[in-house]
Length: 491
Image (cartoon, rainbow, N blue to C red; front, side, top):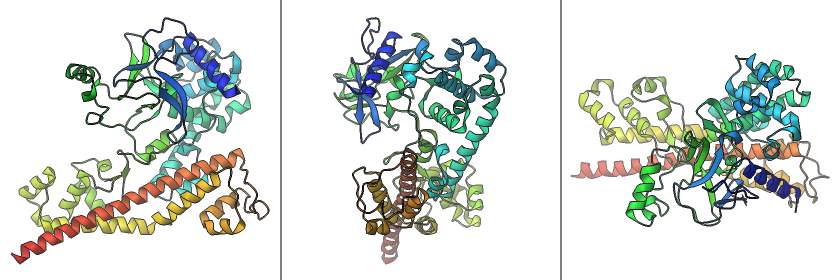
């Protein structure tokens, strides 16, 4: 049995001892908190380590219960340490997330003496959140909004670290736990792994509960896994009535004094059980969790818009003027463009009613809208340093670099292109002796950089594909409208 498997067994045994259970009956002691509904499994192409169903699970069924005493919160940590409690009370200006980050580092510094040690050893040591991006990965995002979001995340993390410095010194944390890298790790842990609790805006670290991988919000009511697939109509109605008001897949329940997590749909034996953290765009997922989804119905692409257009969009928030991942412009964006492209003298009440109803004003106006959208998306794509095709090839080449069995010839690296060359140069790897048939062995630091760079390219490629799809959508609509216009003219 390898060390990782041993420590996981120790962790699950410890979790069972403190009352964590995937069974309604948690009173009976077991060697593991899992086994009745869930098991730890590796889902290589779907998030890595996660939780799989060990039996058929029904939508709305309780799959994990974590008692309050097992939750790692500021409250539960300082309750076990008077020195920490006294120090924290003297720093009321720090935010709740800063306090929890310090508490996490404090517990890490205790090592095996920490009550949560069996849990802490399983928290990842590396994250790919935007705040962890270096200059190379940041610039690889290419899109101004994404670069700015990264700079903002990095600056926020640095500022919060400096503000918490005096508290960490008072706690006499060793330099390695007071370093910016340690803070970056702690704040990334809090951002990506905490669950909401009503008494602390920083949330809680939930042992075992944070092993669930993410699933984007979706409507399962029309799928085989929806409530209508229950054994009978009465059962289906019960599931909907009981769980329809729950916006997430669980939460802290006062009546049982525990965090309760539920199946968001029906699951088959061996299938990965997922948890929805909320509605996020891919850039937001990168910022807060360090990953993105190829298929994300909540993703949005924003394009530069004229100020005069924003002034007309007062009925809709600015963040509602976007393009869906499938390339379709949002209702608010199309409606605003319809109004903007009508001469001001023609914006009477009848036109305004059509706009707010989401209706076409005229064939001519609709053609102008589609033409404007197509040209704007084309302009944005042309202004970016690389194309969809180039990024597709680059992503494939990055995957080659990540392959531990890869053997590269010099001519292959030369064909990779300037961005791969820049990456290899930055990591002192552009060397004929290294790239001449021998396996590439990246350092841990280089591997982390490669992983983040891949996310940058993956994100910008998704962004560009959405713009390209929008061009196709608009051109098709425009051609159909022109055909309609011609037919009317022929009558």
